[in-house]
Amino acid sequence: MNSDLSRNPQRFVIFSVFFTARAYYPVLAILFLDLGLSLDQFVLLNLIWAVTIFLFEVPSGALADTIGRRKLLITAAVLMVVEMLCLLLAPRNGGMILFSLCVINRICSGLSEACASGADEALAYDSLREEGRAAAWDRLLASTMRWRSVGFVIAMILGGVLYDPSFINHFLPAGIQLSADVAHRLPVALVLCQALVCLFITLRMVEPTHAAAGSTLKHAIQITLTTARWAFTHPRILVVVLIGVAIDSIVRNFATINSSYYRLIDLPEWTYGFLGAAMGVLAWFVPAIAKHLNNRFSMLANLGFVAVGALIGLAALVPAWPIFGVLPAMFLMTIMGFLGFTVSRVLHQEADSAKRATVLSVKGLIFNLGYGLFSLGFSGLLASFPDHPAGTALRSALLWQMPGYALLMMGLFAWASVFLRRKAQL
Image 1 (cartoon, rainbow, N blue to C red):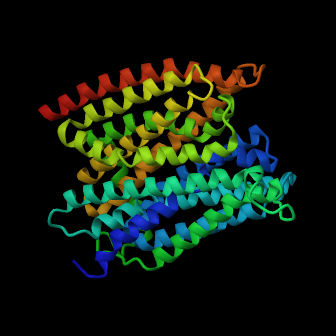
Image 2 (image 1 turned 30 degrees about the horizontal axis):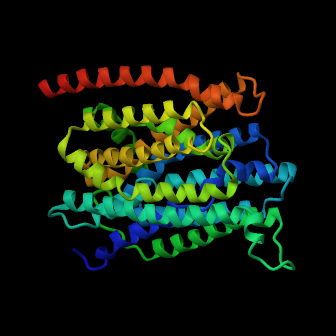
């Protein structure tokens, strides 16, 4: 393997950690609300983010397979920088100026995610030696997930602590006290530093040779269409994507609103970061478990483990036990890691180098569109219930999402079992 390419897997790990482990995650929902947005505006911003992903996810993957994965990753890092600057400059209670900057933030965030999705993994995978590449990828993916968990531990603790002005001011001299507005920007400033690290790392990456490199944009569009058609006619990919998006949508929606759930179960804000860190510690053990189960059991069985685990976690959220309600929330976050490992493993096994980034982007598009649509539906569910006393609507929505999820899972697994059996007999 080219000596320059040999550094790409390490750079991929660093990029993945700094790009994904963002310090504002434990306070994501309340960050926008505390800036002065209404809940309806926050829901609209999530929809804008999802639409941006939908429009650019697959085209960006095709571009990664044609003009190069490195260029897309550099673009993702630049957009991440712009994304954070918008939040840093947004005036608190700034009306349309605030909302406009938040819209630009969400669009840049969606574009950044679209550019990085698939291109990072494809670049790292094609940088590995061809001999034993599948096994090497399993090891690299497991290592990446572990380092991400370390990154989340650090980022979550810092993000939660920095967001709480009373906690910070307790350790500062009386003459140097931070206002709430300044403290609420500190996690964003930290993520801006992470974005600059991502930009530095991507500039040092080396583009590996792959079959579609150097093609035109017209060819990129053709690759998008043919790869999407191939993905939807490939039995294993179709099954893992459809079941995966059904699980991912409901769990990721909860991850987006979890700070509101923490308020519901009476947790102080400064603890949110420590909870995120605890989830990062738990995530350290997920890759080894996921790798063992994926080697031992079939793809459908592993998806079944994830689906049942998510059902148990979602059911345990409904009582909203004070303090102890955090346990099912943490369990759901670990389930996401298991799902991500399983889906990524199947996609990399089934897709060849020429269309790997495009296939991963097809998956990303479907997952993000599913998340956006479910979030919109969940917000409608919230609005259909009275919220007196506070938190009643959230409790009711958590309860009523359960029957739909259970029925959907039963239908999908029944279909997948018959579908895969028939395809195997052909």
